[in-house]
Every structure is written in C-alpha cells, then in structure tokens.
Length: 327
Image: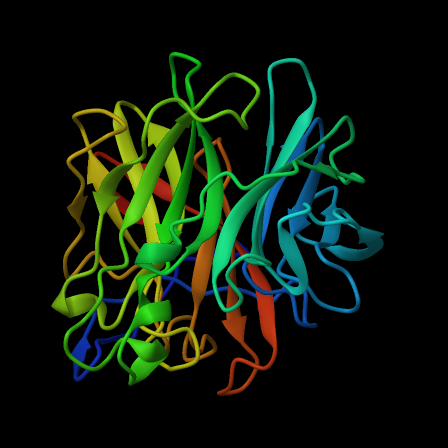
C-alpha cells in the first residue's frame, strides 16, 4: 500500500491512445516531498532511509532523509558535488545508491557526455558515507551513443552475491519526432540492459544483456528500471510512455528463469501498477518507481498539477505474490 497504508484504488488505465477501466487498487496520503524531487531512489542504512533525485536546487544530486519512511526532510547536501571528467554539469539524472559488502557505497548517475553533446551516459562514484560526498570515476560505466546514449542506472545484488547495473539505452534520443521524440516511425528501440559488475560495483564483467524493450502498448519508450528478487521471482519495474504526458505510468515484468530473463510483462488488469488517475485521481504522470532491496518499500514521483515542471516524491509499500504485484 501507499503512504498511509490504505488499500489503493486504480480508477483507469491510460494507454497511448485509449482509456480502459481498471479494477480498484489503492489510495495514499499524498506526496512526502512537495518540492521538485524527480526520479527518486532510496536506500535504508540501519534505521534511516535516504532518497536521491535528479539535479535541482543547485545540486547535482539532491538528497532527503527519513527515520520512519513517512516524514521526509530534504537535506542541504549535494551527494555528488563533482562529476566525472567525462560529464558536463546541468543534466545529472536518476541516481541510485547501493551499499557494498565492505560497508562502502556506490552512486550510479546519468549525465551529459562531453565527447558527444546531446547524449547521456551512465557513470559511477564511490563514498564511505551514504550521503557522500561521492568521488566520481573518471570514465563512464555505460555509454551507448550509437544507440542514443544510456540513462537511468540502478544497482542490483543477486542472491549469490553477484552484482549488476540495470539501465536504459536512450533510443528515443535519436528518434524521429513526436512524443518524447519517438512517436514517429520508424520507432527506435529503448531496451533495458543488464550489465554484470565486479564486487566493487563499478568494474564491468563482459558485455551487457538486453532484458526488456518497448512494444506498442508502451508508447514511445520504456525507462526507469528497478529490479528486485522475491521468493525466486525477479520483478523488473519500469515506466512507459512519455514522462511529460498523462500517459506516463509504472508497470513491471517478471522472470522465474534467472536475472537474465526472459521477462514477461504484466498485463491488464494487474498492470500498469500506477497511472494517471490512481489514488482517487490524485496522481498525474506517476513514474520512476524505485524499490528497496526488501521488496516492500518504494518511492516514485508524480506531477504537481498537470505538467512535469514539479515532480513530487511519493512513498508506498508493495506486495509481491508469485508474479503479481499490488501497491
């Protein structure tokens, strides 16, 4: 359930060109951060929760803190005051933080690359403290500029201790116009990739594997992955459609065959998980859901009003039963 732990009511499913009634699902007590805090991620360290967001307020990576997951305070801390040598400041997107077995932390982030202006790549930074400051690696972790770039990285630790970074190939960046620059034929793929890394969380092992891509039901793209393992089922959350429209949503796909998939997208009536009109009409353009390793606590953003100028952070709790997720 969402903040307030009341059962949620999904009133309608918005696809790219039609509306289909959805069964009722849940409601909440509203956003926990009312200022702009888009693309949030979360991590719990001991008894404290930390959230990280896309650049804003003069910070590359804004942060927030909570001791109860209900009341959040935006910190006067930039987790990543200095970007990697490869990056240009101003567009530092969708960070994620993981804790390694030695207690240290890795922050993954997206930034514009100096070598190919107009393209984003994925970088990493390290720190002994969860809120930083993080020291960036000099080079990128993923940078698929021929396919449009790389964005939205998230870390994942499997049950055997192996580590991965999941990210999106930013194909709509080289699209042909329309919604999020990828609504005009030919539509460019926007696959979700899985890159194994060493125990340091930053050194790639082999080549990345594609684990999901958009289809016609997803509109111009899929993005914002977040991966969790629950009772042998890998659940891959993602957003589809364009973030600046009412069609933006949160959905998920599952795999029972291992972290590399294949992943099967959940279908109506259990998906999408969140859409415009959820929470008795309070949510508009929900997306960017990030799930904690406990497979229960989540954060996501939704628009203030009907534009993406201010994307507020909401919290929730999910329940995973087999290959079905409720919130």
